[in-house]
Image (cartoon, rainbow, N blue to C red):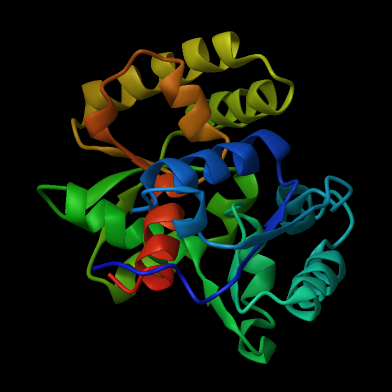
Length: 234
C-alpha cells in the first residue's frame, strides 16, 4: 500500500509560468493519492525575472546561472529535499553546479530521454526545443549515453518552433497549436517517428494542435512521472 511521500518537493518555476502551472497540474492528476493528505508536500518558487535561458546560451542576454543557483539553494533552505525545474534549457546551466546541490535534482532531460526511448519503437525521435537547447547539445549528449538518437528540424522549422514557444509564453495557445501542427506534419512527412517536446511550453502547444497524444513525448509529463516515482517509491 502506498504511503504519503516523506520527501518535500521543491519546484523552481517561472520559466515560464504556464509551463510550470501545467507541470503542477500533471503532478496532481497523476499522483496515486486518494485524498488531499496523500499528495506530496510542495514548496514552489516562481521567478519570472530569471534571465532568458536560451538567450543566455546564444550569447544574446544575461547569464541566468547565478539566479537559478540562488533560487535552488533557497528552496533547499526552505525545506525541499527533492528538486524539480520544469524548464529544459535551464538544465544546461544547472549541470554546471549540479554536483554541489546537497539534495537530489530530478533531471528533466534525463527523464525525457528515458521516456522517449520507452515510447519509440525504433531508437530515435524528432527533438523540438528552444534554440538554446538545440545549440547546447544537452539532449543528444544525454541520448548517446542511453543508446538513443534525436533527429533535428531544419533551420526554417526551428525558427517556427521558437516562434511557437513565444506564442505559448504570450498566452496565444491557438496560434501556437497551429504553428506546431504545421511543423510536425512536415517532420512526419520526412520521417514518421514520435516528437520529443524538449521545451516545457511545447506540450501546451501540442495539446492545442489536435495531433494524436500518443505520438509525442512531453518533457512535463516525463518530469512529473520521475518525481512521482521517487516521492512514492514506485
